[in-house]
Image 1 (cartoon, rainbow, N blue to C red):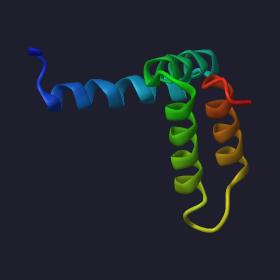
Image 2 (tube, helix red, strand yellow; image 1 turned 90 degrees about the vertical axis):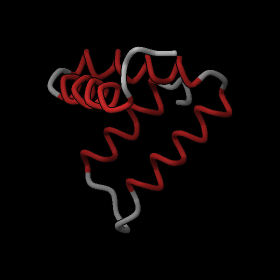
Image 3 (cartoon, one colour; image 1 turned 120 degrees about the vertical axis):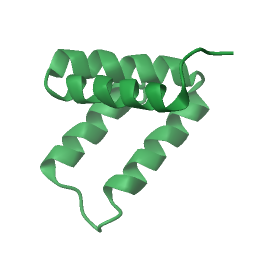
Length: 79
């Protein structure tokens, strides 16, 4: 059992994601780490597909969203 509460884990995860947004190199490392933790290619493909669904849910993708989607795909080894 973990000594970290779910709330603490969530807070720490959000803090790491925010830190990665401010630094392109940190963002790349963060995404690559997530991709590695997801494991096999099928799981990474499902995650990228879910990301694409979220980014297109409003019927369009901004330039920033396209760039982020490409970065996720690349970091997950799917590009």
